[in-house]
Length: 193
Image 1 (cartoon, rainbow, N blue to C red):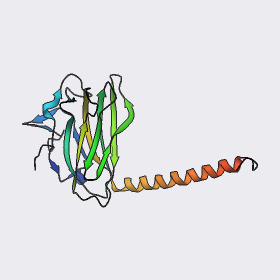
Image 2 (image 1 turned 90 degrees about the vertical axis):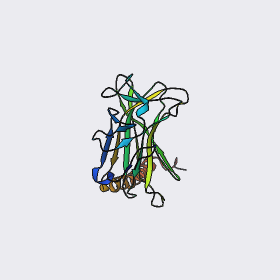
Image 3 (image 1 turned 30 degrees about the horizontal axis):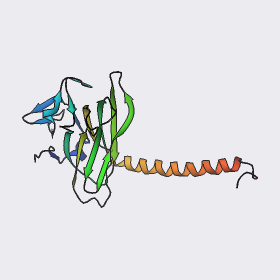
Image 4 (image 1 turned 180 degrees about the vertical axis):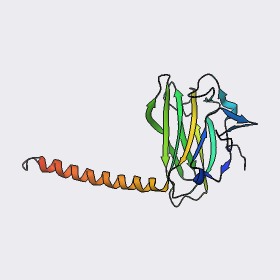
């Protein structure tokens, strides 16, 4: 099913990874690296800068959105979406957006010498999320600056990933309590008020 945001994916859970490097396109769409999925943004291709290959998406105040895709969801699964961004002002995000849900990327700390920075967003939809899909996209929210995006990747994380995240959060919380207790025990009793 085609629309202005791209195709609705029905196989993400079995495929687990969908990549779009802005190098493959046909008709009015960008294509995933395997040629199976359409992404919005072909009209914004630029060969001025690229993280890999020849092209990236040039997003500006007139064309703020690219790599648009409707992702069919499994609500119990965690997802990660990442891309490489080149922006003089440090603006531009990867986002997941749906009814009463929004998540946007943060820099991962990975950078190249020529100004590219990796951004990533990880999310799991709440069980009360009412839709079966969510929009994912790159967004130049910088106002009047130009931002370039390249190497867009969507991953459906294995089911154990969510268990590991919850386990880490539980351990982190427990460790914080232990550290506070240890610090309080090391403070002389006359100062602990």
